[in-house]
Length: 225
Image 1 (tube, rainbow, N blue to C red):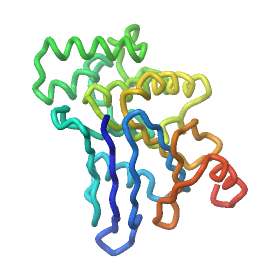
Image 2: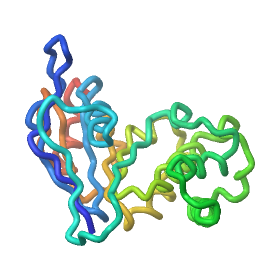
Image 3: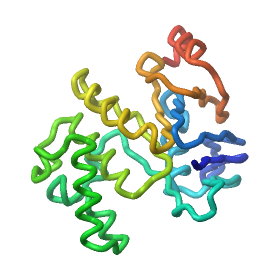
């Protein structure tokens, strides 16, 4: 088991505008956390910092484990529009790409890709171009590609905002299959689209506050939502 610990995290743009200040929280593998925030509240920026794509102005993001011999832990990111992170010609190649870049042996790559195709029910479209898939299929491919990197934590940036109801069900089935394997952070601007979670946070005015599902749903009465 690993823990994602965020300590006194702050980020400001070069011109001085602050995005968030003093963000601190922790989740463990197997836990599901929701981060609610209005448009331009800094949700996407925070997830990019957690996944290592942006460097904070101050503070620390660390993945800690009680087992010193465990493999190096990673924090993955799935974007709102999965097309923005897919570059391979086929689903199968997309799942293999990250492993190839790590220099993994071909036999291990084949085994891992087959496991992911089965886990996310992608066998029937493994030779398809990601561009031709439905929204739900694209998000499942994005999930599988992120999991190919052996992530301990997965950040999901409004993953269902572009999906219809059937595609959202597909996405949730895929997420249910990995909930026990990693910690999940789901960012959304809509309290009514929050999935059931272990922890709830509210990001506003540059601060991240622990909350509850009931309190966040009550925010629908406010003009921000």
